[in-house]
Length: 358
Ligand SMILES: *[C@@H]1O[C@H](CO)[C@@H](O)[C@H](O)[C@H]1NC(C)=O
Ligand SMILES: *[C@@H]1O[C@H](CO)[C@@H](O)[C@H](O)[C@H]1NC(C)=O
Ligand SMILES: *[C@@H]1O[C@H](CO)[C@@H](O)[C@H](O)[C@H]1NC(C)=O
Image (cartoon, rainbow, N blue to C red):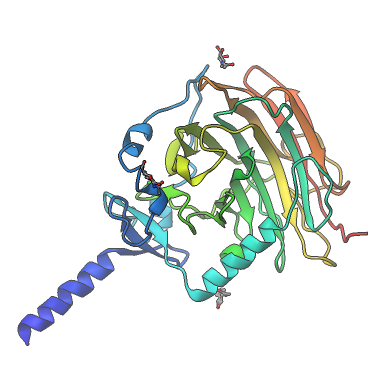
């Protein structure tokens, strides 16, 4: 009897050891990245051997950058640090969470080809690269963080996107209650391939690598006219695609090359800007700061993507050139300011919304 009790005790301890909680009340499982029984990462089977090597490589930079901290694990995790070494946090989803996520994917997929007009409820104010024959090994930007008001199944996002049809990766911030069941601004990714599409780590495409930074984290520093906060993000392809976060360019996850059919080696299109969705009949939500109907052409008031860059075929991070801007309705605006200063290619975007269709 005693023995049985102690076995049970150890089992409970082990179970609790692999569970962690955030101060927002979310539960995460700590998963061993190398064992992955939990996930069945079939797409990884042929890849385990090369990712730790690739994982360390960096694109080449022409100049250095200052750094500031966006994410502090001790403000996020109840245990102050996240998972034990060698493990990654994966959100424990309830049936209700998964149901909402499925709906969020359906909503997100009900859309568009870039640079065409389609008013089906998804609206864009973006700047994208023009020449589809170019080869890109990635893109990056610092995106100002806002918390636009959305309701129901609406969402409002600001993001970078890389694409090589039929594959694409989006990364940025979003307010998406369908996905997260709250109206916080959160870091998100959306991965689309011929076979699947999903947010964050909800399907087998994006592999998280940090013990402390999961996808979907709330971004609490919201910009105001007095002070702007940026989300610095980079997508970099070097065999696999890597997601780099913050000014120290921490890798927080990667997509194994064989997840994709076309995007595996490079992108032929990179895009920056805002995206919103509203179901029919509901006035569309604000995009970006949502302060005013027309852009002020001032980074204190307009949402921006600054230092928009692409990574070229020889892995240099360079200023984005040959770009064009697009917005599908007048309620959302985008201004490509072009190069302002040595290291800056600035894009302003946003709008108050309120579009209810024709
Ligand atoms: C793994 O590699 C083998 C041999 O190269 C190939 O036949 C198989 O389809 C690959 N599996 C996956 C999941 O890519
Ligand atoms: C959303 O969160 C609330 C608690 O804030 C919870 O009661 C509700 O069940 C959640 N809804 C879904 C669909 O997960
Ligand atoms: C990439 O950029 C670097 C730095 O500007 C340049 O030297 C190199 O030629 C570029 N590579 C390609 C393929 O354009």
